[in-house]
Length: 280
Image 1 (tube, rainbow, N blue to C red):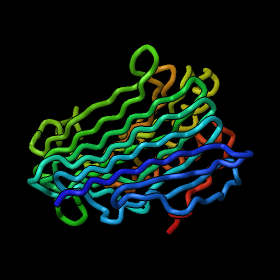
Image 2 (cartoon, helix red, strand yellow):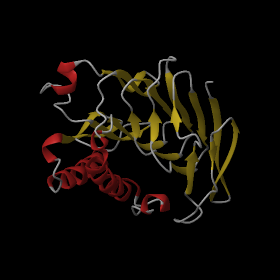
Image 3 (cartoon, one colour):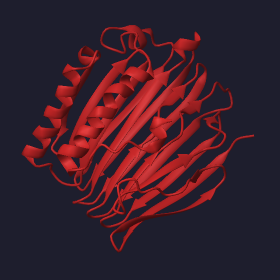
Image 4 (cartoon, rainbow, N blue to C red):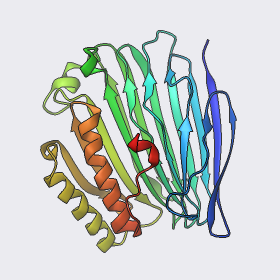
């Protein structure tokens, strides 16, 4: 039996406080709102009790961040795409950010088990003065458990549309049996974790802000053992990107987290307040 789970999450700013309200259908919900940084930023944990998807399952998340509101969303654990022969398993999020809104969409990794058929799709619409930080971390197989990714398919789609065409559109398909992609020097080169951190704005990022963000990312890269497998660029006036390849999730996350914290500081003047869940 396949699962269809839907969540509608809405952030509004009310008297200086970012307030989260949600409705859900099926096993997908938001836990209690937390305010470790004060009323202006609402932290939430997105929970999917079954913790994994098989063929035919769909997780559908619709998010709205109202004018001036700031929401931070993370998850308690990885999203697992299990081996299945029952068709496509889909996780999708569509977020709309109004003027002055900020969203930090920071789920933990997606794990692609060997034999899965998975689609991980994210679409973020930004008003002219809205800003977004999000990351995507994908691990192929479970190398530490001697369960390599030797069969199946994982599809990625990350889209940030703009008024005059896409600001950012990234699509990719990883086929386990594509030897050139999986192990070739111009592909994954034997690495099994792909990670991307994105800062995006509804309008062009001021050059001094962009340069400060790139400098912070590159300083973290220089101190990282992954410095030869990662890079930070500004491929579009409205987008800054950090990309990482790693053998497993942990070293990639050890780079993404300090860069996220540094970007919060240089771009928003905020401390890198780590969600409480990450310390468990």
